[in-house]
View 1 (cartoon, rainbow, N blue to C red):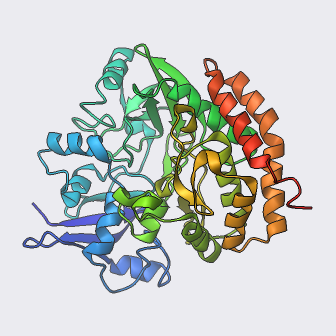
View 2 (tube, rainbow, N blue to C red; view 1 turned 180 degrees about the vertical axis):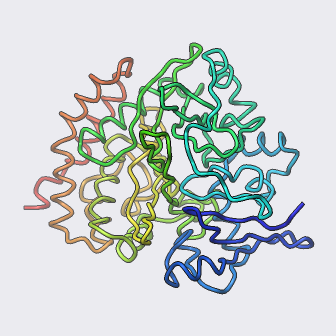
View 3 (spheres, helix red, strand yellow; view 1 turned 90 degrees about the horizontal axis):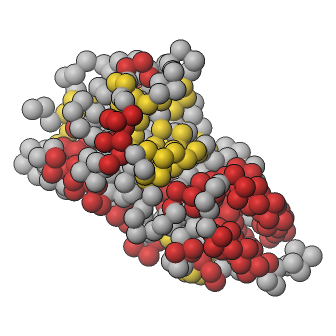
Length: 416
């Protein structure tokens, strides 16, 4: 078995990952092809891995690769199925790296170049087979099994599928790019499908960039169907993988530390990255996103739930929003990333939001205008999202109403 993995990006072998046989430490080096094709210091794979001739050591490489892999129980189950240790980052990415978040394809170096990505390679499945995949997610996370070797970060159960040209579902076999993420309702948290669908539609009705969603019932189980924003599918079935990374990867932090209380990135650190490394008005985009997450009571908006899109030229910008859920509806008021050092979702006020934005470098008046605009437009946007989401518990809508009241308290005069 080789101890060298090739990292492919946009049809080029851009990097090699090696594992020391004795220490098991990883290192990554960019290829001469990459060094000859892109400017030095461009964040080709990640902001934490800018292009340079020197190699990167385990302390930087392992967190980046771990950021591509499943977490928690899903990682344990997948590792056991592959006869690997859950701690074996190299072995897991070797087995699963042919379809990852973003545009990367990671495979043994001796294998031929990856095929051109297309949905035509997907394996058609029947409704019965689809139901079995959904029912078996606890034992086969992501739908991994047989010729399906794919990876996606996160703890929640989910199924990765490819929507084929005729609209039917297919299994992403042999490196076929997955195009959709199917997320079943969490048994311990009823109505998560309706909850997340509502929150995502609310964001869309506000004019925020957000992943497209729909709901579906398969084998009696409710699922949220999320269209992947890092895949661009053309009419002929060909697929462009769009590179992205989350903010844990961008700062070189392992997924286990994604929450600020565990040492993960803060909003201030994310804002610093956006201000120094991205195009467009990214701080405004971030403040709108944070305001929305407080409005819906989403305390789980950690550093892996915000990401950066990488343009082919190296330009960076924030990705569409995803994983929007009212955790406050389930009486969980913890904040994954603090707002002006406030650590509870239901204790953030408008003035604390403004203080946070000012600490990023936004003028207070401009911050007020951004937050005020979102709060003004949420009620009609929420009404429309409620009408679009059948079965939504009234309590989710009520959470939004109470959060607006909280944010508005002692806020109206602030921008005067």
